[in-house]
Figure (tube, rainbow, N blue to C red):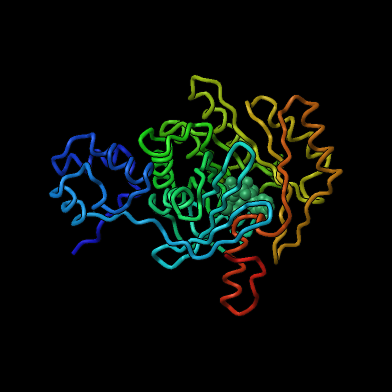
Length: 359
Ligand code: SAH
Ligand code: SF4
C-alpha cells in the first residue's frame, strides 16, 4: 500500500488539485483548510460538513498529522522553547516569544544546517534533513492548538534551524498556508523568511510569494564574511546586494529588507565595520537589526560589549538607517536556536546534562 499523504502541509492551491482529482468542488479546499488551521480539527470524523462517503475517501487516501512535541522548556520571561520530533526521529526546535502586542513563533525549516556559519550552534551540528511542508506548518499548528497554548501566534519568523531557501518548495508551500485567509491569515508583514544569502533564490522568492525578507549579513566585506558566513564564497556580497535590489524592484509597493548583523566582540563590531556597513547599504531600502551574539558550548566568540553595540547602533542611526538592537533575555532558554538540540545530542552521547527547566 502506498504511503498516505499528509494534508496538514497542503496549501489552498494543492488542496484544490487534490479535491479536483476526487471530483469535488473547489470550496472543499477552503473547508478543509479552515477545519485544520482555524479550528484545529485533524480528525476527519469531526468534519461535519463533509458527508460520510467523502470522509471515508479522505481517510483511505490521507492523514492529517502534526509532528510530535518531545520536550518543552520555559524561561522566566515567558519564552517557550520546544524540541519537536519528526517522523524520522530527528529533533528540531521551535520557539514562542510572547511580547506586549504580539506572539512570535520561530520555526525551523531543516534539521541541522549545512552552511556552518562560525557563530551558529545549528551549523556546528551539520545537516540532517529537509523538513516537509507539513513539518514546517505543523510547528505553527502545534503553537496554536497544542493544549498548553491558549493564545494564537501573530507572527512567524523562519529563524530556527536550517536555511529556508535551501528547502525552497516546502518553505513556500508552508508560508502560503500561513498567509491564506481560510487558515492562519497572517499578513505579509507578519511572516519573515531569514536567509544567509542564497542569491538566486532571493530573486525567485519575489515571484512566488510576498512575505518579509531578512538577510543574515553579519559582515560588511567579503574577507570577513567568507570566514563567518562561508556560503559567501559561493554568493559574494556584490551578488547578494544585487539580488536584494532585484528582489525589491520586483514589488510595486514600497518594501524594506531587514539586514541582520550579529554583534561579536572583536570580530565585526568596530567603528570601521560600521562605516563599511553604512556605505554598503547606502542604496538599498532596508533596516538594520543588530543581534547580540549568544554564546554556546564549543564557541570561542564573545558577545560585543554594550558600549560597542551602542556606538555601532548610534553611528548607523546617524547615517539615517533605522537600526534596532535586539534585546536578549539572558543566556538560558532564549539562547540561539540549535543550542538545545546540540545539548540534547551531547546528553544522548552521555557528555552532558540539560540544565534547563523541563515541563
Ligand atoms: N539560516 C537562516 C535562518 C536561520 S538562522 C539564516 O542564517 O538567516 C536565524 C538567525 O539566527 C540568523 O540571523 C543568525 O544569524 C542568528 N543566529 C545564529 N546563531 C546565533 C547566535 N549564536 N547568537 C545570536 N544569533 C544567532
Ligand atoms: Fe545555517 Fe543560518 Fe546557522 Fe548559518 S546561521 S549555519 S545559515 S542556520
